[in-house]
Image 1 (cartoon, helix red, strand yellow):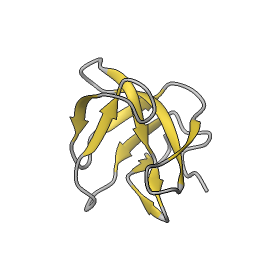
Image 2 (cartoon, rainbow, N blue to C red):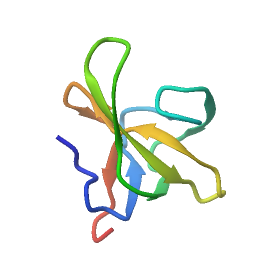
Image 3 (cartoon, helix red, strand yellow):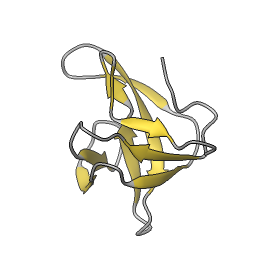
Image 4 (cartoon, rainbow, N blue to C red):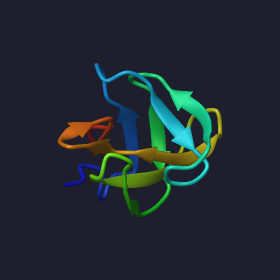
Length: 87
């Protein structure tokens, strides 16, 4: 279940480490996003099977420095991205 549907702004959750930002869902890493970093959601997600076999929502996001890419929301009940309150 996604927690970002309908959100405009989000952040990398605290306590789960950095999140890798990729060119495409599961593709080449272009940067990382530290814990607590905020981002803008740029549209609907793409659902893709992860290497371990579970399905993940991949969101296209824009970081404050202007970099755009895809980040996975989470896996197996662990969330790496979350909506900002009132976001």
